[in-house]
View: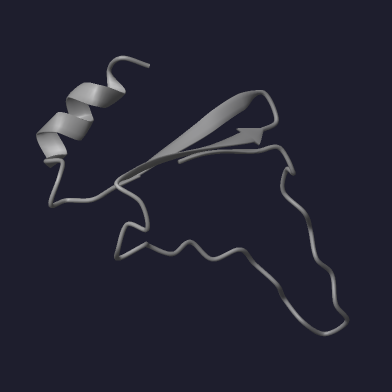
Length: 67
């Protein structure tokens, strides 16, 4: 699975309410391997999510060096 997001960061504003983005982890891979790229101002941020029954951390680290 490949996802490319270009929406950028949005700022929410509500009276008397402080809103901040929250990072969260994903516990289970929905696909064998997925790559999500997000466009942030002048660079891209990439995130791999993978099935640990199929890929080891070392394999994924090696895989990332190809990009």
